[in-house]
Amino acid sequence: MDKTGKLILALPKGRVLKKFCTLLQNTQFDLVEDPENTRKILLKTKSSDLQVLILRGWDIPIFVSSGAAHLGVVGKDILLENNSEEFIELMDLRIGKCRISLAGQSKEVLKEPRLRVATKYTKLATEYLYSKEIQPDIIYLRGSQEIAPSLNLSDAIIDLVETGRTLKQNSLMEIDVIREISSRLIANKAALKTKGDLIEELKSVILKSL
Ligand code: PRP
Image (cartoon, rainbow, N blue to C red; front, side, top):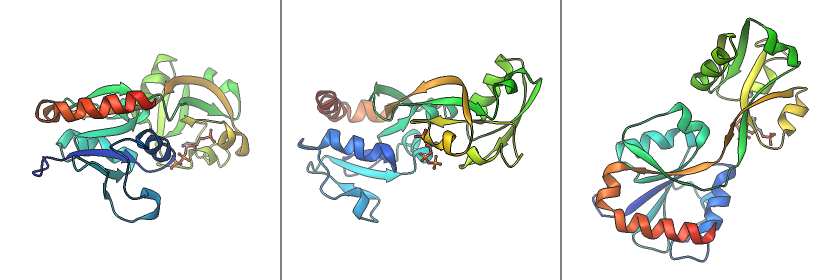
């Protein structure tokens, strides 16, 4: 835990960062520095009570479950792969909306008894394929899954789809929407007890901006 008593909120680099920072704009928790114009990782806000930590989305559950960060903004897709007893989901922020889908070159893949699927969502993909009575062959890739079918590395992919542009430009079709996704505010359970008032204040500021 942070010994200075400040609340530390972890935010993910990428598309959601800008949207979330807009929610804090013109509030007492507005950022002092633009996270896109600095290499600093822990940033100040207008409030001496809140600091913002800029991380990769996949690392946020680790920081929040350990208490290194008290709060985090993280995609539901990441939470589905990273359960922890140490944090809870406080709020659906209704930003970062997208979906996890099965995509491939043909809808026929769902008729296969066994499927090679490139994905970073190994848990969700395995559960999904078993539910369709398909034997999963998971190929774990951190990114660029969309190229795997055309190079015959996999038969299909399971990945995030927002506009559908990446699928289209790599000659893939969306076959099945597995789960709708949005960003969630998560909180370390111990921090909820020690910093509950401050967390409530931040929550109500966010709620007003949504
Ligand atoms: C995500 C996702 C897809 C793409 C989908 O990647 O993995 O590749 O966005 O968006 P679209 O439907 O609007 O084309 P992102 O750009 O976030 O980077 P990543 O490859 O590091 O996950």
